[in-house]
Image 1 (tube, rainbow, N blue to C red):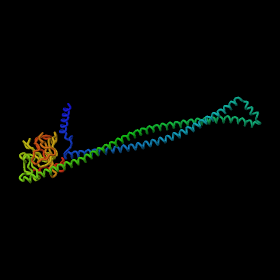
Image 2 (cartoon, rainbow, N blue to C red):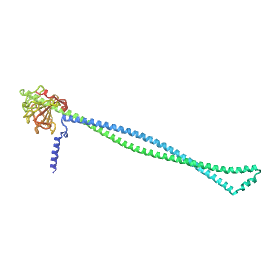
Image 3 (cartoon, rainbow, N blue to C red):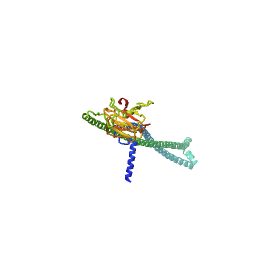
Image 4 (cartoon, helix red, strand yellow):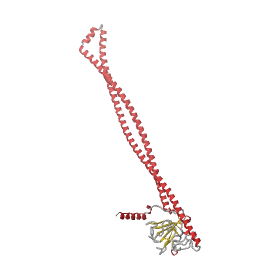
Length: 412
C-alpha cells in the first residue's frame, strides 16, 4: 500500500512539474535569469510595500505625538482644575469659619437681646418710673429714657445686621460649593477624555510596533531575495563556465579529429546535415525541402513575433536539427507556450531555440553537447500552436526572452 502511495505521489509530482515547470529547480542559465528577474520584481514590490508601511508608521507616530500633546494639555488643565479646587476648598473653609463666627455672634447677641427684653418685660413701667425717680431732673430723665430705648433698638439693628451677614455668608458658601462642583465635574470630564486619549495612544503605539515588525519582516524578505540573486549570479556564472568549457573541450576534440582526418568536415553531424552553412555558421533547422519561412519576424497584424516559423505542408514529424554545435541548456515539455522546446548555447554568445516539437520527440537532454545537423526532436504542434510548424529563435546576450533577435541573417 505504501509503495502504491509513493508511486501515485511520484506521478502527481512529475505531472505538476510538467504542467508547471517553475516548480522544478531552475537549473539552466535562462531559467536562473528568469528567476532572478522574478526576484527583482519581488524586491521592487517589497520595497514599495516597505515604503507604504514606513509612511503609515510615520503617520501613526505623528498621530501618537499629537495625542501625547493633547494628553499633556489635558493633564495641564486637570492640574489647573486641581489648583482651583484646592483654592475653592480654602474659600469654602474660610466662609464656613465666617459663618460659624457669625452664627456664634448672632446667638450671643440674640441671648443678650432676649435677656434685655425679658428684663424690660418683667420690669414693665417700673423701669421708666425708676428712671424718672432716679433722675435728678427732667432732662436727666429724658436722657436716661432715650438711652434705654436706643440700646434696645441698637440690639435689634445689630441682630438684623448679623442675620443678614449670616445669610450672605451662607449664599456665598453655596455659590463657592456650586463652583467647586462645576470644577469637579470639569475635572472628571478632563480625566475621562485623558484616559480615552491614553487608550488611543496605547493602541497607536501597538500599531506602530506592528508596523515596525512588518518593516523588519519586509527587510528580511528583501535581504533574502537579494541573497538569492547573489547565489543565482554565481549559478549563472558557473553554468556559463561549464558550458564554455564543454564547448572548448568539444572544439579541441573536433580539431584533433580534423587534424587526423583532414577529409572530414568538422560540421558534419549524426544527421548528415541538411544544408550548407551560412556566413554565421548556421544551417537550416529543418530538412532543405521544408526550409521555407512561413511566418516572418513580425506577424501580419504588425505585432512582434521575435522568431521565424517553418510550417510548409507535410512538415509534421520532420526532424529538427541543431543549426550549429553547442550545449543544450534547456530541454523541456510544456503544455502551453513553447510546448516541447529546446535551447542550445553556441559559441560567440549565441543561443537558438526550437519550439512546438512533437510530443515525446525530444532526443537530447540538458547539458548534452550536440553537433551541427544532429537531430534534436521532430516538428509538431505542442503548446500554443495552431498547426504543425517549427518556431525558431536566435538570442544574444544572456539568452533571455528579451534578447531575441532576427534569425534570418544567421540562416543560409
